[in-house]
Length: 73
Image 1 (tube, rainbow, N blue to C red):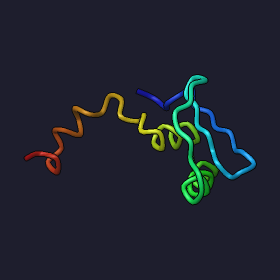
Image 2 (cartoon, helix red, strand yellow):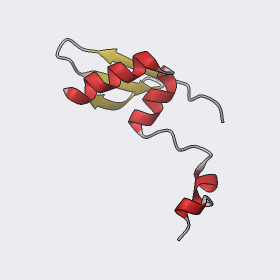
Image 3 (cartoon, rainbow, N blue to C red):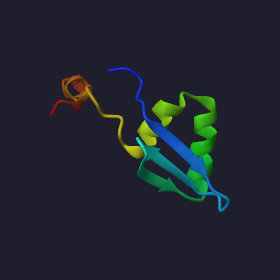
């Protein structure tokens, strides 16, 4: 899988940030979390950052992570 696609975000006057995925609301961040998100999105790949903040980043690598020695029980 490549870079996630379809994410967008809007900053609002009250300081909140709304993240959407293909036009549908994924999450709303407020206060310090919104500020932290905005700082992170300015530094990195916006699509990957939004995917991670919404929890929509686990696509295709679950099997690899499950087999990693650190995750074995």
